Image (cartoon, rainbow, N blue to C red; front, side):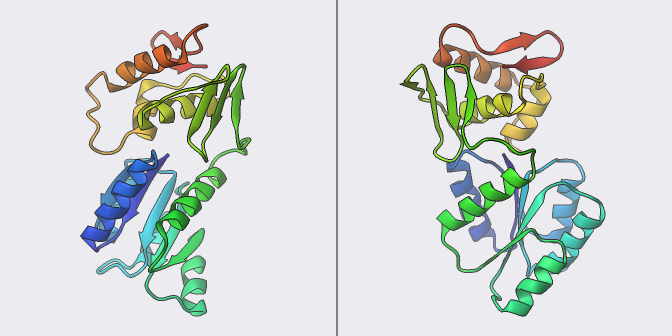
Length: 217
C-alpha cells in the first residue's frame, strides 16, 4: 500500500516512515500541510497519516480540502490533544480514524491496514489463487505448502497482482503503488522484481506478461 505521512516533527515523521517501510508499505513524507496537498495532487495514496496540529495550514484544513476534492485516500489523524471535542472536530473535518499521541506503533500499523482495506473493494483476509495463499496481515505467502521467502517489494507486487482479480496491472501502477518517492521511474525495477518473484514462485508459472500492457495472475 502507498502511505503519505504528514508530520511537522521531522524526527518523528522519519521514524514512523522507517517503521512502516519495514512493514512492507511504500511511504512518502512531507512536513507541512501545503506540501501534503501538492503531493496528493500528483500521487494516489491508500492512506494518509495526518498530524492535526500542523503549522501554517492546519490538519483540519488539509483534511477538508481532500474531502472536498473527493480524494479517495483514507485519513488517519494524529494529535497530541486527546479530548472528545478534539476527536469530534477532527472526524467532522473528514478524517476516517483518529489516534492520539503518544501511540503504540503496533496500533498505528493495525489502523493503517484497516483503513487501507476500507479504501478498496471487499477482499477476503487471505488471497488464494490455486495452490498459492497470501495473508497480508501476517505477511506470509505459501505455494503448494512451501513458505515463500519474499522481499517487501516482491510481496507487495504479488499482493497487487492477486487483488487485481485477473485484471492486467501495468508496470506504472505497480511502481506507483508498491514503491515510494525514491523509486526511479526510468529503471527496470518492476521488471527485475517480477523476474525474482517468478523464480521464487516456481512452476507452473503464475505471472503472465501481457505485451505493452503489464502483468496479471
